[in-house]
Length: 162
View (cartoon, rainbow, N blue to C red):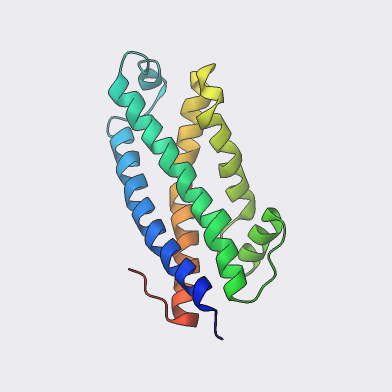
């Protein structure tokens, strides 16, 4: 199977970006959870700008990686393997059926959870803590999905992972 040069360049770019985003997200996750992120830490956000900045970095990096994988890499992968992209949920379901994603439902939970991390915590710190915990638990699944897509591209088209 052959793919056009523009799509090949796009896939190579996305792979490089995802690898970098994974490293940055793990750094922020480790820094945020160094002492645990529980309600006690959330209550200090207004007095602890360093913690607030670390949280903001984690949330931004989590959202960016999920977007890059689910909205960009998955679409480019579908085009490369000559599958017609559909609605977002349908694309996730297709990836799950092909064994690339462990659970499209869980991916959607993580996507919905982002809104809680971004907006709703301002009024309810318990929601923030819960959302951050869900995000921590979802990192492995996101990275696994990215790795599965990348491995498939490497096998099919000989793309480089670096």
